Image (tube, rainbow, N blue to C red; front, side):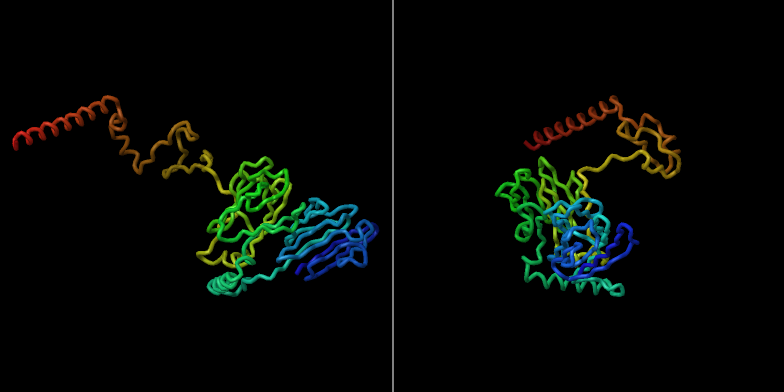
Length: 338
């Protein structure tokens, strides 16, 4: 179900609010009496925009309105679909519509329910979906262009899928602005990750270009060239119910680092004895060794703590003499027994 709350600021009229709730698969918003959610403002088109429900997913499309439609301040392109989430604000000139979405969650957690019960119900839900693997498998769904509405299932036995223009790709996007092998989607134990394969136009996740591997969340939007896709995981509600159960924690969806960042001098902790660290930090040299009792080091001869060329030569002479003694001893034993 979706609940829409519109705040209208018409010219010469006091602000007022209208509320609309529906489980319908299609909801038309406009000023005409035939619209499902009627907003009586002259600046709003007769049939201004439409919300479509499918697979527990709500998407919004502009119906060629005169003044356009926005989501959270960003214009919706006519003919394209944009995913709606709870808290999103739809802008229709003098009306601002706030969305609240309630989906049928298989494993919605009761605040008074124990973690064991939550885990049991979630596992039962997963087992119940195993018999219909194709329906419960995650998938990509195109939101725009000639492929709008097309599904790309991410089902077993495959564990990775190439996205691109080539017919060899598992997720083939027929657009000249998509590289032949544009991106790679992989299934790992903790979820799905996407990475750019060196494409010309890059890969965006939720309108942010990725530079490294990026873990995906349910309803994340991928932009591959001009093509927009949404990632849908039907089991996301089950995993969400398990996230607070010990042993089932899932890592976040932030980009995975390629290499560790160099240490920040300002964040390097002080030695146990207190006081600032002395000596170079950022690659100019090594930090001084920390000792539990620095007075003990102070009593040692400094020459014993460093490797000198003379000391190294002495060690080689001793090692060579030991080898010679061993050889001569072996020869003596051989002739003694001969």
